Amino acid sequence: MLQPAGGTCAAAVRIAFAQSSHNNRATPVASSVMAQLLSIIIPVRNQPATLDKLLSNLVAQPHPAGWEVEIICVDNASTDATPEIISRHGARYLREERLGPSYARNLGAAAAGGELLWFIDADAVPAREDFLIELVGRAAELGDFGGIGGPILLPDEQARNPVAFADHMACWSAWHARRPTGVSTFQPTSLVVRRTVFDEAGGFDPRLRVLEDWDLQQRLVHSRERLEGAAAPPRPLWFVQSLPVAHFARPNVLRSLRHSWYWGLPSRTGWLLRDGVDVRSLERPLVRWLAWPRLLWHRARHPLRIGWRTSRRSALLSAPFLMLTLAVWTTAVIVGQGQPQQDKLAPI
Image 1 (cartoon, rainbow, N blue to C red):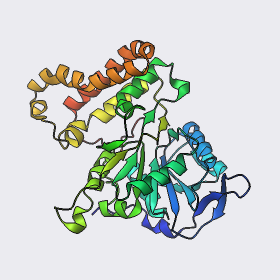
Image 2 (cartoon, helix red, strand yellow; image 1 turned 45 degrees about the horizontal axis):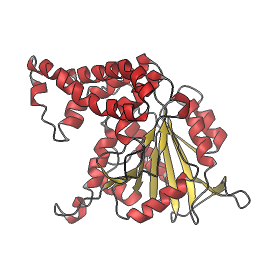
Image 3 (tube, rainbow, N blue to C red; image 1 turned 90 degrees about the vertical axis):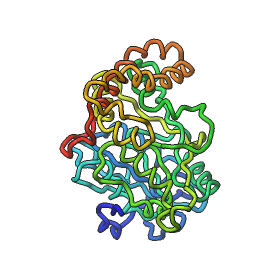
Image 4 (cartoon, rainbow, N blue to C red; image 1 turned 45 degrees about the vertical axis):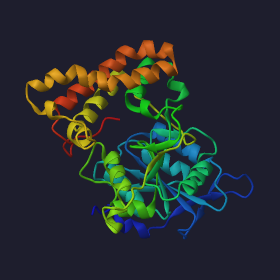
């Protein structure tokens, strides 16, 4: 069983954010109880601008009745103004020197006091003003779930940037705003999970630098099997349409291509194979290149379709950039040999 990193931090003083009696907004208060506490865990490395927007949004959110909220930011060895941004908003600050999102998220979870955990990326922001109220309400309705996420939207300020539009469609088109609520197979960027289920699944695997969230969610679905045996029913992952977040896309070509390459390298063994996709043809040194056009088209069909439905103008302008970044991803899948080395940082 995987053990969360940094368990010694769990006894540290916790700062929670409770409703102000006069404005129903977030005000720092001391908290020492676990009941009715939502823990928001944000891993971050060198993303002060987007983190500032996220924290500004979170502290302005009204709270569900009877709930407190704590915001935990885990600084994954940032070298910029990230600590100052966290301090300015009064969120709890933790630092994790071991590089990788799994280490950072596990440290945050170990320090969290809530039974309900919400992991959100530092470059995302809730897309509705009552997000926390909706989050807690839907968690109560869904009961024994593996995880909950929702739509991943392109921020309005980036909607007319064709490179950002292409980057967004390449990464997040499966989680578009029109998708109906239902059982999902994967919920990136924003994930709600119960503490008990997270612990049963063993937390994030620190050996993984890419697809670590997908790996955890497969174990969340099957977490009951550890206690009840192989016949135990799964805990479903849910896509909830009413829980949208806006995710800032990479606005220039080089950043988008670097991200596609980094993410594509482990996808053959870390995602496609484990997801039941027949990748035998990709294991043959010469024959695998014959599969390149088929794999590219398989990967591109959905982003192209969703982009067209979202905005025909943006879809046309962004198409060359979309196909370029997906071509880089496809090449990385074919040549990739697994997870990046531990000294290789994920491009932001």
